[in-house]
Length: 60
Image (tube, rainbow, N blue to C red; front, side, top):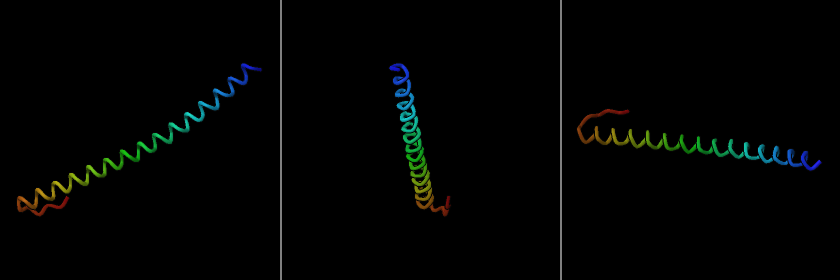
């Protein structure tokens, strides 16, 4: 009886951990997307500014 109870409890905690892991991974994915977007945007802005400074009208 005691053993069965412990098994049940461990199962539920593992489920909870799994759910938390999924949540955290999705949040990390969102953060990664934001970082990629901002780096892409800043890179484009940098290229645009450099292009303007050099007198080239390049839009990326």
